[in-house]
Image (cartoon, rainbow, N blue to C red):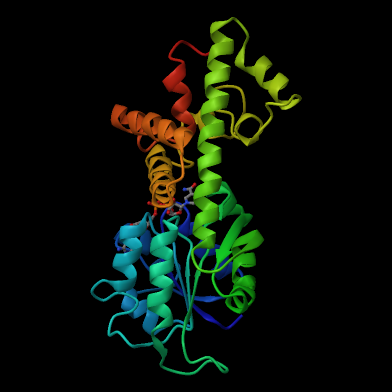
Length: 311
Ligand code: NAD
């Protein structure tokens, strides 16, 4: 494709996603506040620029993959941000794949729909915004097998689909602005709680004398089977190639999980919905973070329940 794509946020996820777009033939301009992250691209001859605004100036579509809401707001509405200069922008499509709260996504989408395009695109004279968070983790980003859950105007979603499929293998249209963000925090809430449930049960089993590998085999052929037991087992030595088998390094950090649970809790409170498991899971993940596990994969929560040796 000859679409010029801007990519901002070249971290654990963004690095791979940007590379998959390059492999698919898109012409990229990238930006990150971390110079080391940028150097990996400039070393390969990819255009790197110093500000989000410069990315916007040279792109038809801009994708952001940033830690959290505050970073996304800074990159869009901050000084030298994507929307710098206010009313007229070049990109006709903005895609935010960061996991942020639906409320912020909706505000941003509204903000962007009030801008005008410097050059009309077809009949459209205003840019579109999609919230398109992903699941699949760093391995999914590297392999190009992410799932995108997308909120925004459906025509924009359809136009963006080839980009999503260059970075992933599934896309789900979730409805209007913010609905992708809502889907994502609900997914992560369920995942956090299932990881805690599997960890608590495997720790109890070990305490009662049954090896985690045996109990995992039972789970995986019984009703407790879930992603946390059969694809991302939290007990060291039970599965190969998962964070628990490499001291919980790589993967999805406890800090980001705590962040997502905070988003779920805040969203539930906004609509006065009870969320007792979200609150408890958040407490446990925050405790893990304060004990020094904030950069470790979230499956390290097994240690919250079991501190003996793993035989
Ligand atoms: P990360 O911290 O590894 O990467 C974020 C990048 O954004 C960093 O390189 C950072 O330097 C850059 N950045 C921060 N502020 C910036 C700014 N103002 N301008 C330019 N660049 C800036 O995070 P990640 O693991 O890649 O995750 C990104 C998002 O994806 C998060 O919202 C996370 O919740 C979500 N996510 C992560 C995973 C995962 O497994 N890691 C899975 C699904 C979703």
